[in-house]
Structures are given as structure tokens and as C-alpha cells.
Length: 104
Image (tube, rainbow, N blue to C red; front, side, top):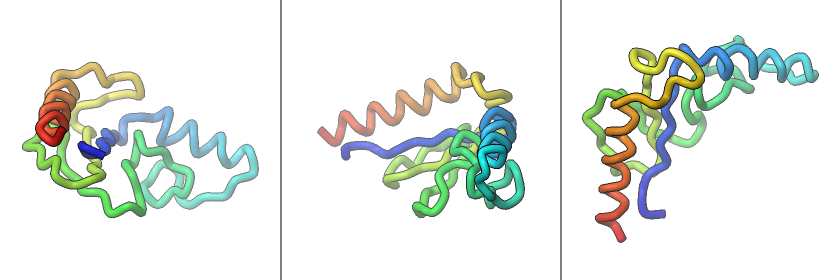
């Protein structure tokens, strides 16, 4: 792998923080508190990657992209499930591409 795995997450992503865990429960799955990072069935879009020793930084930067897995907290930027076409996400993607290309 030449670059990090980047996961943006936002508490504002109700599709992932509420709908997905509720659907899991309706299907007979059991979990902890709905919509929180302790929710066994909470999605990465709401909580970031869990259990993999991921670095947690703000989507606003600065970006330390030296870790293999990075959670980017976007609570103040991403306001809904589809709200990802933002200048901040474009800047992050550009920084990740530059870092990856330098490693090739």
C-alpha cells in the first residue's frame, strides 16, 4: 500500500448513525447504544474505523498522512450522508494523492 486509508466521519450522517443500526436490530442483530462509537453495528461514516488503531484528526487539517488508517472527524463540515463534495474533502484527497505519488 502506498498511501493511507482515509475515513471521513460525521455525527450528522443519520443514514449511517441511525438508519443502519436500526435496520441491523430489526434483522435480529444486537448492539450497544444506537449511533455512538460503542454501537457494534454503527457505520464508519458516522463513527470512523474502530478497533484498528486509527489516527483521529480533523478534516480541516493539518493532515499528517503518515499513519496507515486515518479517521477524519468532519462533524463541523459534513452535514448529511451525501454532503461530501466539499472543498475540505477535495483538499484532503489532493494531499493523499500527492503523498501516494511521492511514494511510487
